[in-house]
Length: 68
View 1 (cartoon, rainbow, N blue to C red):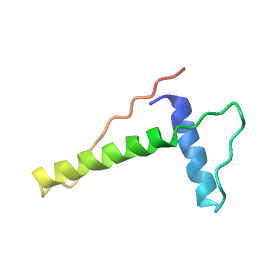
View 2: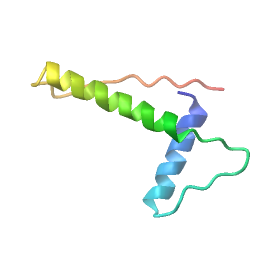
View 3: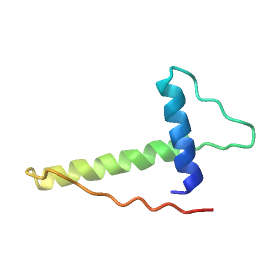
View 4: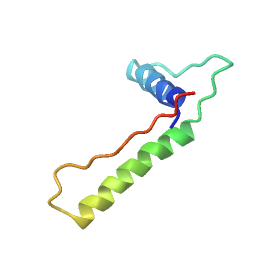
């Protein structure tokens, strides 16, 4: 994930939290499908791990940001 994608993800969540529709400038491109898919994959991996090891209390994931 690029840093800009993470920052836009935060922006979208903050605006939705405030009850607003997310708005962006013309130069900002937000791929919400990518962001939704990213978090969906993490949730799916966590669910698979919980099925394999029902007594699991914690699951860790590494977030790598590409700074460009």
